[in-house]
Image (cartoon, rainbow, N blue to C red):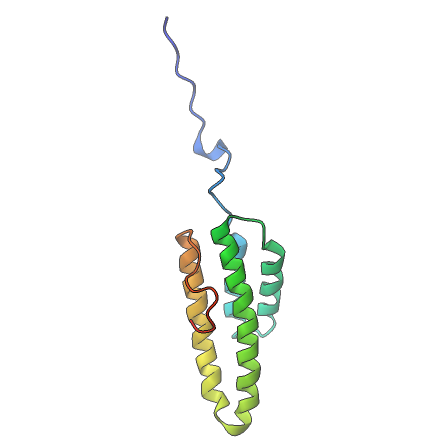
Length: 127
């Protein structure tokens, strides 16, 4: 008896594997956090998205949403302190340091998303 091999399903028609996760919204949140340096209200939109999508993906993606939420709240705290300190001039370099801090955290997050791994040092207040 000859058996005919089963026809292969094209990759475009295959259902997504359980390991695959949609990282689009996490990338959007990182982009909104970065855009907040130019347009002030976008980080607020980003943190709302992160709260909404939290709990809807694998553990490594959940770590990104947690990291984004922490980045927003810590950045807000640092921003308020630095803004208040602009009255005594030291706030200007602190605002520049805040911008550098935000860029580094978002770039680390983007890199982690591309590698499908959680960001390092999620609970840190620094980088």
